[in-house]
Length: 93
Length: 310
Image (cartoon, rainbow over all chains, first blue to last red; front, side, top):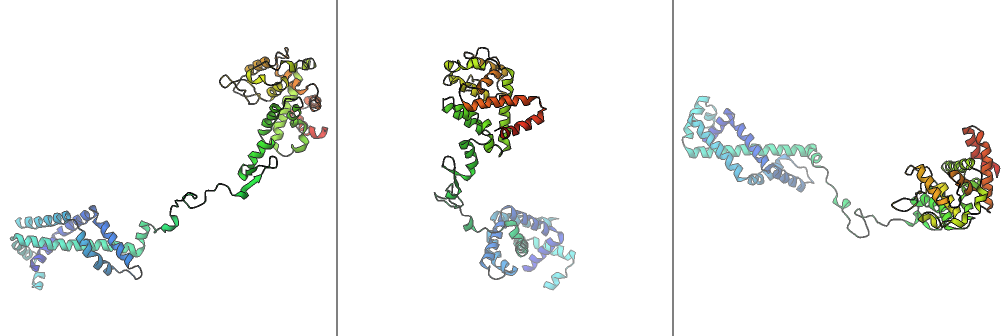
C-alpha cells in the first residue's frame, strides 16, 4: 500500500501539482486563522521554557500534534476532495 | 521493492499510477497520504517562520515589548488622578502674600493680582483711578486721579509701558486746554449744581466726576446695555459725533458754550479748590510753552519734565 501511495505522491510531485495543493492548503490555513492559533501555541511553548533555550525540534514536537488537531474540518475535507478528484481525473487522460 | 520503484521510468510510473487509480479506495488512501505530507510541509514552513522570528528578535519587534502592567495601572481613588498623583491644587509654599492687601495669592497669579490690587501695570492705572474716582465723591478725590502726573517721580521710571501711557494722558491734558481757554473760571461755580442731568449712569456723578471720566474714556452710552463705553476717547466703536453729542448732553447744562472736548478737559484740569489739580493745570500750561519745539525733542522733554520740575 505504501508503494502505491508513494507512486501517486511521486507522480504528483513530478507533475508539479503538489506545489499547487501545498500553496492552496497554506492559503486556506492562513485564511481561517489557523496560523495565528499555531503561533499562539508556539509562544506558549516558548514561555514555558523561558529559562532554557528553545530549539526548533522541541517546538515541532510540542506544537505539531496540537496544530494538527486545530485544522478545521472544512479545510481538510476540501483538500482531500481536491487531491482525490485530481488523482482520479489523471487516470482518465 | 523500494529500489525497484525508485528506478521506474516515467512511462512505468504512469502505467503503475493508472493501474493503482483503477481502484477508488487506493485513490482515497493516496489522497490522505498526500494530504498528510503536504500538511507536514506547511506546518514546518510556519514553524520555521516563527522560529526565525523568535531567534532574530523579529517577533519582539513586530509585537512590541511586553509592558509592565503595574507601572501604568490606572489609579481609581478619589484623592488622586489616574496616575496616582494627588489632585491637591496648590502647595502652600507656592503662595505669596500680597504686600498691599495681605491676601495669599498663587505665585502664578501674583503679577496680575498686583496689577489689580495696587493699580500698577498696563490697564490697571486707568481702572484703579476710575475706581477711586467713583468711590469717593469729594473734590479731593480728584488728586488721586491725576496721580499719574504728580507722582511720576516715585515709580514711573520702572516700566516703559506705563510711561508711554502716562505720556499719552499728558498729551490729552495738554492738547485740549490749548484750544479753548476762556470761560472755565466762570463755569466752575455752576458745575456741582447740575449733577442730576444727563444719562442714567451719569446721574449719580458730580459734574467733576463726569468730566474726569469723559476725559479718559469714550463714555458713549450703549443702546443695549445702557452702560458707558469704557474704551479710550478714540475708541473705534463710536464716532466722534456720538462722543461730542454725549458730552454736550451730559455737560451742557453747566457749560453751555462748551462745544469741544477741549473745554471740558481744561475744566477738569482746574477744579475750584484742590491744590494738586491746580498745580497740574499750571504744569500743563508750562508744557504748552514747549509745544513749539520739534516733536521728538518735545517728547523727550516731556518725559523728563516731571522729575525736573518737582
